[in-house]
Length: 264
Image (tube, rainbow, N blue to C red; front, side, top):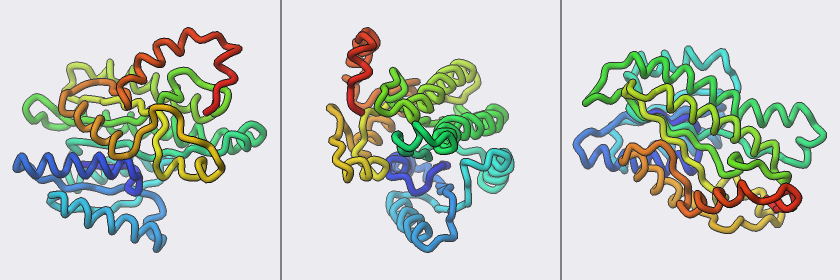
C-alpha cells in the first residue's frame, strides 16, 4: 500500500483500516509512507508515529520515502523506485494537497498557481505515472490495483468563497472521472471520494479564523469509513456523507445570484 501524503490525517485513517482488513485476511501489507521534507525533525516524528500505528494495525512493514508532489519531473522515477523495491502497490491513496488562502490567491497569481499546481496538476501527473505502472503489473484475481483519489464537493459546483481551491478540485474531479473510464477492463480500479467539509488538520486554520464547519461536515474517521467501505464494494464514486449527492443535484439548479452569496 502506498500513501502519498504520509502525514495526512485522512490518508492515515484510510491506511489503518486497509492494513487491519488485510491483516485479518491473512494478507498483511507493506505500507510506504511518502511525504516531503522527511528529514525535518517534526515531520520525521509524525511519520514515525504513523509507522508505529500502522504496524500495530497489522502492517507487515512500514517504509518512509521522500516524495515532493510539486516536483513533477520526479514522479516517474519515484513510482518506478517504489515499484522496483516493493512491487506494484495494491492500494494507492492520494492524500496530499493544500487548501491555500483564498483572499491571497485573488491578488497573488503565484499563490493561485501554487494551489492549482498541487491540488490538480501534480495529482494528474502522479496518477498518469501510477496507472501506467499498474496497467503493466501482474494481475491477482483479475485485479492489478486500486487508487483512491480525494476530490471535494467544492469542485462539484465552484463557489465564489473558495473558487481557487474549488476549481483545482473541479479539474481533478473531471480528470479522475475520465481516467476511471479509461481504466475500465484493465484490472485497475479508481475510487473518487467527494467529501464535504472535513474537520481535520487542513481546516483547523479556517476554524481558528472563525469559519464554522459547513452543514453535513465529517471527520477524518467518518471519511475513512466511507472510503474503505466503497473500496471494498468496488464503487467508482463515494460522497461523504452520502446525502450530499442529493444536495448537490439540487445545488446545480440554484441561480447564480444566490449561489455566489453562499459561504465556504
